[in-house]
Amino acid sequence: MTEESKQNSLKKKSMKAVMWSGGEVIARQGIRLIVSVFLARLLTPEEFGTVALLYIFADIAHAFIDSGFSSALGQRQDITHTDESTVYWFSIGMAVICASLLWAASPYIADFYGLDVLAPLIAIMGLNIVVMSLGSVHHPLLTKQLKLKKITIITASSLFISGCAAVWFASAGFGVWALALQQLTESVVSTAMLWMLSGWRPGIVFSIASLRRLFGFGGFLMLTSFLDIAYNRAYALIVGKVYGVGDLGFYNRADNARQIPMQALWIFLSRVAFPIFSAAAGDIERIRRGMQYSIRGVMFINIPIMLGLMVTSEPVIVLIYGDQWISAAPLLQILCLGGILMPLHLINLNAIKAIGHSKVFFRAELVKKLIGTGMLVFGLRYGILGLAWSQVAYSIMGFLVNAYFSGRYFNYGPLQQILDFLPALLLSAIMACTVFAMGKYWHNSFIPLLSLQVVVGGVLFVMLCQVFRLEAYTEVRTMLAHGFAKK
Image (cartoon, rainbow, N blue to C red; front, side, top):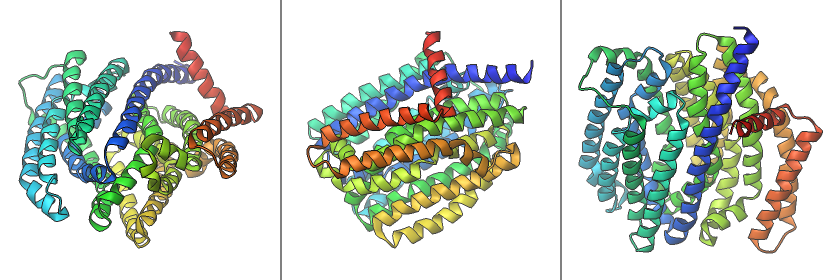
């Protein structure tokens, strides 16, 4: 097979996966957005902030339960059913241990924050962790096989059912419990459907040899997960303790608004880029070209969305969450700047993981977190806005570190990557300045303003892409046309 035919094969495989992953992402983010619109009008910032405190404990537990094995199952091509079953039983055992530790620690955590309601909420979270572990192997196997149609059905169903339940609980006066029960309901439905649709069943077998072999790759990913969680969730612990759960609620909702579009790309890259890069693990040149293709396409979408969201933060916050959340708008503006480069982190790190360099992956994260901790401490001196600015600085620094390793292994370093997305950045900046100017001279209702800004911004950006013949625009348009033609 020639180099050109290999590259075309990689692109065709990517396109099919992108279409289904795109459908799953649209369903996921669309349902979450609609549910957020209702819940933000039924619950208070303090209630959202209270639940946000629990995320770090849940994430640490999930890192222990996974221990990097889901990535190992996805990366290795020589996985046996014994390996899969061993990981499954290990995950359940770790889930029970983590849940028990959380239940035992819940009174002390509640006392630390002076919130009695945290203790029973942590108990619910522990139950949720155990339920999720029951589908811990099914999901990565579906992802590895690129069976994203089934993942789309599972995601849409679980989010819709849990979202309806949360709105009902909130309207019935359950308060913060509506958010906790939403997560539990989502896990129950998702796990049940994974069992029904995946076809995979664990064997009654447990192999220490399998565990050791997979841990050789996954162990460093587990350590990386701990570093990532400790840094990314540290703000919740700090803000909740120093500034109170009310301010944490504002920060959480601002970050949530940014995550609505950003997580869509994040999920796509996790489910599509890593399996495809892993399939090409023996061909560095194919991975490099795949990275270029991914960066041009993903940044072409992400940059205008982040800049557009930044300059329309006030109407977006009011429209999604209501007037009582307007204090989250300045935070959203700052966080969107940091969100511009976020897809690059996952593309670079997925490429490094795909060639089996989990140690390098860990070292890169260790360097970033050490520097980022200093940024976080410095930012806290300037309040919650300073904390948000520290996230922007961390995003820039993190990109440079990740891209350095890509330059080392794939000859695709920071400068080459910047040059690949720079045209999209410049055209997006022109669009954002135009949209921002519209907002400065509009003094009527937010809803017509936002509608006009979205239309004008979108049309202007597409026109600029056509006039300047942006390569990424042509590639994305071709990909979408190919995807719809296949249907």
